[in-house]
Length: 65
Image 1 (tube, one colour):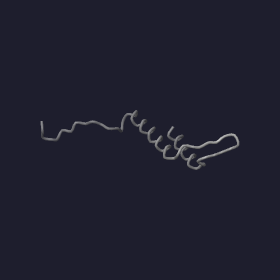
Image 2 (image 1 turned 180 degrees about the horizontal axis):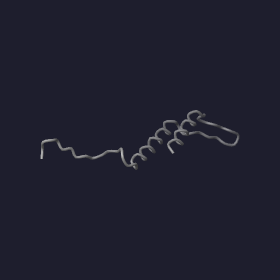
Image 3 (image 1 turned 90 degrees about the horizontal axis):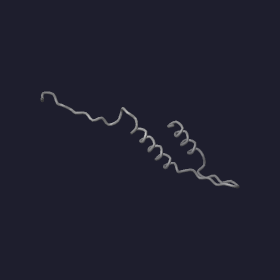
Image 4 (image 1 turned 30 degrees about the vertical axis):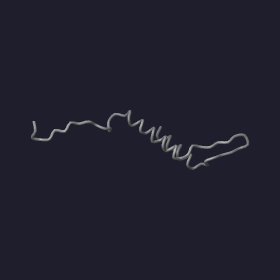
C-alpha cells in the first residue's frame, strides 16, 4: 500500500490540478493534503506494528541494591 500511495502522489503531482471536459470537470486534492494523508496512514500503520516503538525499560544503576 505505501508504494501505491507514493506512486499516486507522484502521479497527482505530475498531472494537472484541474481538468475540464465537455461533460465533466475534475480537480485533484492539493498536494499538502495528500502528504498529510500519507503521514496519517503511516502513523496509523506504525502504531499497529510491533517492535521499533517506544519501549519502557527500568534502568538500575550499578552498585545499588
